[in-house]
Length: 374
Image (cartoon, rainbow, N blue to C red; front, side, top):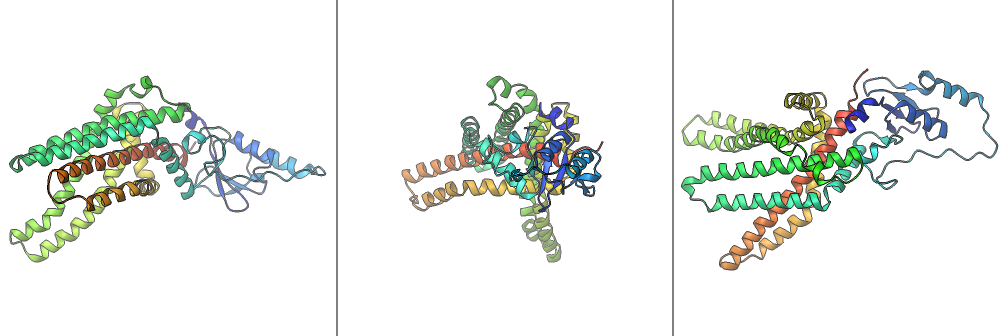
């Protein structure tokens, strides 16, 4: 599996003379590309981003190759060394995590590499089985919304709780299925079989549902509460200064709550990839967020931006359809129902992409950008 493969490697960062930084999974790969000329001798290497760059000839793993390069004369008429190709997802059989598992691959590091990972996640999400799961999740969400809207206002609290519980349960099931399927595809470099996708599904759902209830549901409730807090203070004749302070605090709290809800999506990869106890998955998730919060936050922000960009044409079509919807009548009700369900499908597909993207984010940050020190 992917865990043993990545942990068994001894990764290197390679800085080429032109300033580009590449990542190699182990020493053997760097030596092979040094011999072929794909990596120039004047490059520098280091093990982790915290270390200083060291020239090839001063690194004991490559000293022998540097000495041979200096003493051996270049053959007459020898072709120029093949330049290192940038990974753009068009060379080879794909890109992203699946292609990164190839032992001899070099790839760029930095923000551009993040974009490659997220485009690879989009490619993995736009497959029939995952799109079907996303559409089903969206339909459940749309039906839950319609169920809540049709309940008597006096019982709206019970209806909201029931609709949210139904949606969270469906989300936990889809999250476990999509995460398990994506992980099998990336670790075995082939489509996942149904038996592999549903393996351990009940255990994963039991692990994920309490977290979603605790983090996502409570986070959304906190957002609603904080939004109504300034008005409540004003209605109850509190001092104007206290009401203004509460309004300013609400803005800051809302900004902090949404990233926490987004980071909760990494819980599914932590549970399924680590495949250990619940406590071990929680420790792995906490360690990842604590040590690499900046990289994880940037990854999540880019994933949301890419997902919204991909959904923008469908959202625009919904908006145009809403403009032409008659204000009243049977046709208006039918069109509003269709818009709600169509919007739910779009939201479900967006959620599936975020689930797949978080598998890529977890594997990337957990096993590559934060390699263990030996």
